[in-house]
Length: 137
Image 1: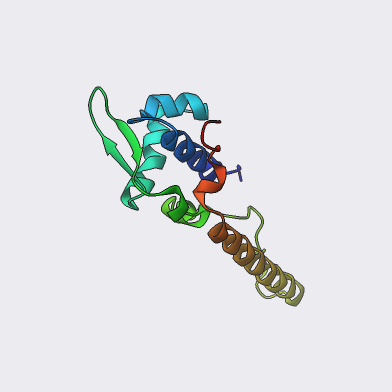
Image 2: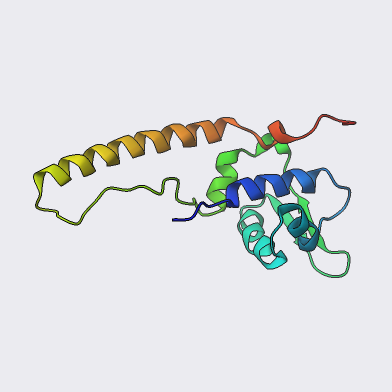
């Protein structure tokens, strides 16, 4: 499974959007994120639906942050991205009748659920403002 960079990219995009006067186009964000403007618009759609950004169409259109950076957390952005898969590893289910596989799979599922819970709790503590450069920087 390939790494999913959407959370990091959207946090990066939100910081850039906040730091600009007026709107930031998908094309401008695509340059910053080294990706395609279509992918930017697709990822930003979840953030728009969640109410974190607004978009305007047209020649001077683009994206603006619609919330205070202190009011949005990494968890909020993660959830707006439809909760990407956290771990690429998983429990094996090839031999459901095997006692050893069941024990291993059960232990993995418990450990991964605990780790995911800890990570999401950490996400809930980190505000978008933590990534903003200080004023006049």
